[in-house]
Image (cartoon, rainbow, N blue to C red; front, side, top):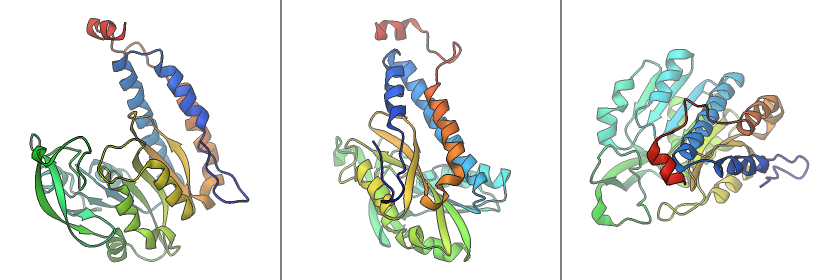
Length: 286
């Protein structure tokens, strides 16, 4: 699939990568397919952090931070200032707060397109579940969840209060089906040039997982309309994946880096030590 950034310049998310990757999966057992998918997610994260460094971005905002490990690691290793936002109060108290750092601001709230309160759905069997969300899964009913009212804020307001003028920032959005509302609540600073968002990693769905979710194609088109271009994706799950966007104006600056990581996807394979060679897995495969 290709994406036209404007009528003068064409930016493409290389669809040959997906074809190549699917061919690799066709020769793997289910468990080894999962291992290879996870390797693509690792590659995408490596590219994201290299882009942070290459673009000399000063602020990092982690939406759906869980344990805030990304924010903490960046604060320790670089001069980046981070904001880690986690809505689940149980997760925030037990995990997020453990990664406190002077250069990380930890916020226990949700994000949406307007400030207020929303129902937050936590699986009854795990109050720290990473898939707790403001949207229910489409294949589950209310009896599966504990439901609490959680405060939500617009990301625009958080940025306005915390980032100085003439600064740059990057977004990391992992919010279990609510990506559209998070982006809508950040629109002012997705088009603002005095406090500029230059880099975005966002989790999207190409199949229905959450009730009332937006599709990956909708979110891609929305970010394109704000002058972002998709440059890389992973294959972490069949129905859900992560994608990196940058401002179109920065594309040429990082093209060599993009090509380098595309080549790594093309040559990706499992080593003998990485493979699941269990008897059970061989039986499942054959």
